[in-house]
Length: 409
Image (cartoon, rainbow, N blue to C red; front, side, top):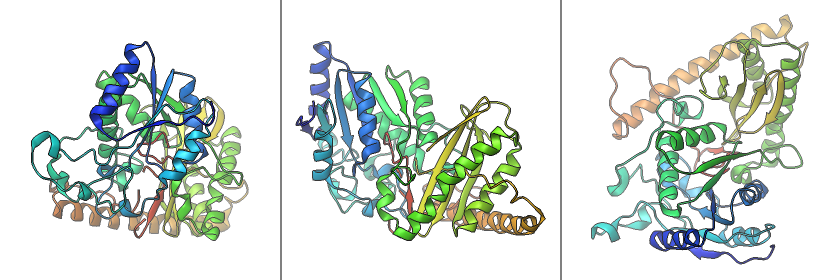
């Protein structure tokens, strides 16, 4: 019921003991992983979890493992007191909040002295990426090798290994029966599903639909970083999704055309494209023509904030939803594909591809220099690790309307 005071747990052993005690009583446990700074989208995930389990655990932990050194870990928004008030307002309530200080500090396990402030904290500030510290003793990572490569993974090469690893750790500590993730971060949701399947976790993964603010912008903890003007421009994402829906229903199934129109739409508002892809819903592999269920994904920068969203196409009927950062796919007005736009579109596309190649090279060289990825010989560079966060700072903040990460947004 509303007003319920959840038990706050900070220790791994304490959390595991509580879960095992509850399960010994025949109770089922639902986990909603978050990075805090909760909004209505998170609360909807909790409500969904109530449909699948007897007890609810919400984790609040800003995971340093998914941030590269240039990303906005230290400025990720937090308001633990406000989060607790919101959790108490949820119908049915929350039974426990797992808010560990540092899940990458093993000083108690090994007897070695480590500075926990140099890693992450669900409830503290002054965070530093554990990638930057080369793990500070942590060197085991979980990777879903194929699904993590595209979309967000191109520009954030360490992001999904961090997400998969922290979710694995949370699963081992909380031992839930069910875990709920937002489909807003579509790629993250699919990666967790695949990881659970491949590693035989006895956990049901539930995907929950996106929540939007009244103005149509997908809810994200990072929306706080948008200026009023940037927020207004970012609304073009949701409007474009509706245009894409109309275009798909009208039989415009060539992915190259839809992607070009998306790039043109977003750049006309002053946004900078990070990626625009139409992929198979399950494999996340790019397709050239819509013949089966696909997902349209795009990410674009507005000022220092990256907005992303997705739209899923189900056998001819397009369902507009959001995807982990706010991934959005855009389509242009019919009639704006006339000859006046063709030259401009080609120029934009050429500039976009050139900038993308330059960023990829610079990002890979930086990561190689810091020893975070093997030195490659004769291979294309990875995309630049844009200052960002999940999942959806410092000098640039990817607003993950998937928040994520791992967060059930």
